[in-house]
Image (cartoon, rainbow, N blue to C red; front, side):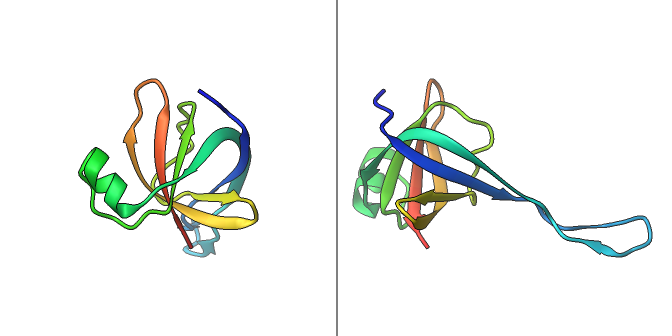
Length: 99
């Protein structure tokens, strides 16, 4: 698998309440990943995987349990939301949509 693109993965945890009932803001974590980013479309996603959601990019990378639906990917100074991960056996094929 060709890994020529560098992206930043951002995950934000939900806030919680402490033992006194006060709200504790969630934390944000980030990490850099090497992957391959390709243009993609809703039509290709529907044809290849059977999902009918808006997507603009396909990210192919090694399996990483930190990548989840709803995670944010920063690529070329643009933000993308992880919309779907339809393939996750030997590698991830992650569907992204610009936000």
